[in-house]
Image 1 (cartoon, rainbow, N blue to C red):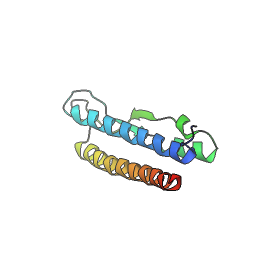
Image 2 (image 1 turned 45 degrees about the vertical axis):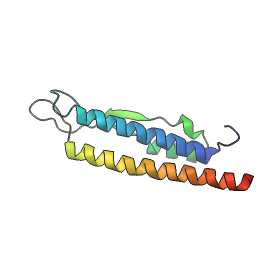
Image 3 (image 1 turned 135 degrees about the vertical axis):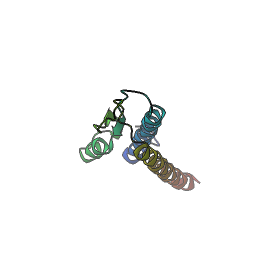
Image 4 (image 1 turned 45 degrees about the horizontal axis):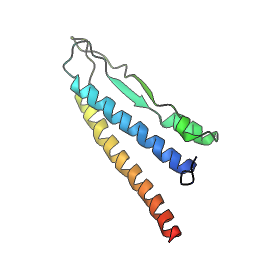
Length: 115
């Protein structure tokens, strides 16, 4: 860790990585909604990040897992649910904004302390 990065900042950064990956995967799923035999994917990282923090590990070491959703496929073999993916995109956008706000707040406190 560097001078301005503690475990909290590292966790915020890793969470932003996970949420950004989730947005990319949802966008990929939406782009393939009509592709025959395409299997939707999902991203999970929250439990890995929580375990890293609880265990005292570097949050940056928490894995970002991309797995299949396991949803039932339609007649073409595609299992993308457009409503689920759209909701995931909106939720991820809000989460990312909240993480950026938390990071900006931490940096403003540090900036104030340095003055």
